[in-house]
Amino acid sequence: MRLCSRGINRLIIAVVAICLFAGPAWSADKAASSSKEAATVNGKPISKIQYERELSMFQKRAAQRGQPLSDADLTTVKNRILENLIEAEVLYQQSQKEKVKVEDQAVNEQIETIKKRFPDEAAYKKALEGMGVSEKEIRAQIQRGLAINQLLDTKIRQKVTVTEEESNKFYNNNPNLFKQPEQVKASHILIKVAPGTEESKKIQARKKIETVQKKVRQGEDFGLLAKANSEGPTAQRSGDLGYFSRGQMVKPFEDAAFALNVGEVSEIVETQFGYHLIKVTDKKPARTIPYKEVQQKLEQHLKNEKEKTEIQGYIENLKKSATIKRFI
Image (cartoon, rainbow, N blue to C red; front, side, top):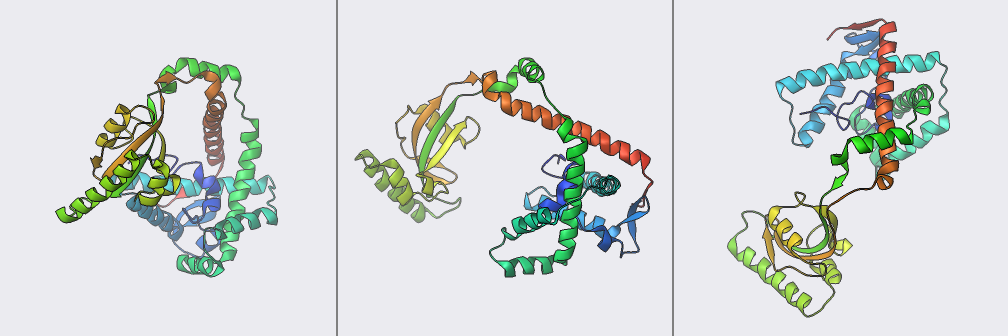
């Protein structure tokens, strides 16, 4: 397992309260009620309970992704979680020194965003109960996250710039990053057959796709047939899969799609998912993406990278001037 921006990241902790239900960071006030401390920052405690909650949430997310942690991974994750909590506390304390003010409206907006993830108010309240947390605690945690974000905006993000010269230099020095392989755009009709399905049901599925194939050959609209018959998630989009390159689809599907000309429909293709009819609607040859086409995204990428470096340097300087004690 590799720690990355989608897992535990040094920067995510700065805005973790806004993403509360994806990975909650619990309030320092609640943490202070525990006599067992994982660390202290300038005398302010980070409780072992708080630390263990973060660790438990990370382990659950890893398991849900099918990536359970090895012993070596667990050691790395434990260290990173503790440092994330320390860094969040250091940043929040600095935001208070800088007298950063978070408006109630901003907190309310984040609360409303969270509530929209639930079907109704009752489901939202039930989720809070299940997590053992009150809305007051959530509001406090959101306020902390927003204060940290504002601090980093003022100190770092607003000052970081990327010139066209810098982005052009990066583009010219990394030509392989801008090579786009051949792509096809295709739609498909899928009749599902799960692995291990008994032969009689496979025969039924085959007959169903053959019936649809006959209608395609008679000139009926492929998209309408996909909507009416496809058992895949793209059915409501008339079977549209968008553009894809080699290596993105299972091999039998890929081989059939890339062998077709634009407008052609394949014979019946069998994959691990079932039976498919594939129609290619467009093709793009391999090319190098022109600089002007990627300039805006490239400049944003370089700006993000600069910000990460600057923010981490800022955090490290704050940590050097803080009194930090680690007990784990």
